[in-house]
Length: 125
Image (cartoon, rainbow, N blue to C red; front, side, top):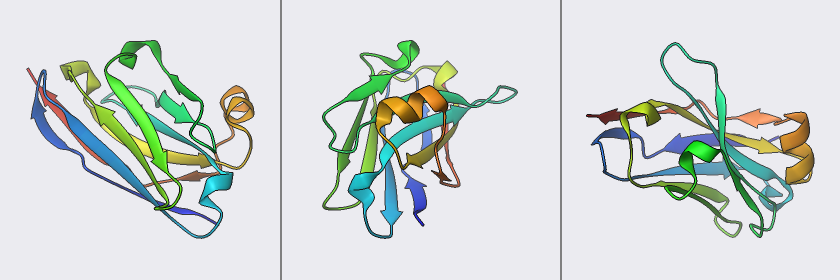
């Protein structure tokens, strides 16, 4: 069982930066592939970024490539999402998720087992 708690959301002007953090409880954090998703107002939840168990492989949706960076610290049971050059269309609730399989399998099947409660990111124009 893994519990995920996101933090770091807030209100920022377009062009600004935020860093989201996801703290995981429980043991064996390093055995989980981790991901970030978001759900904007009136939109379906969408994939943002994912990282492999070791942190050696990362994946991004095209709209955030070059602006967002996902990373993890297995010693601290934490996964981060550094968001730069934010745009109003990045406004959403951001969710952290954990999958118990290899990151490629998790992304292919969409099978993330655990989810956080979300943190709101609002980007003003």
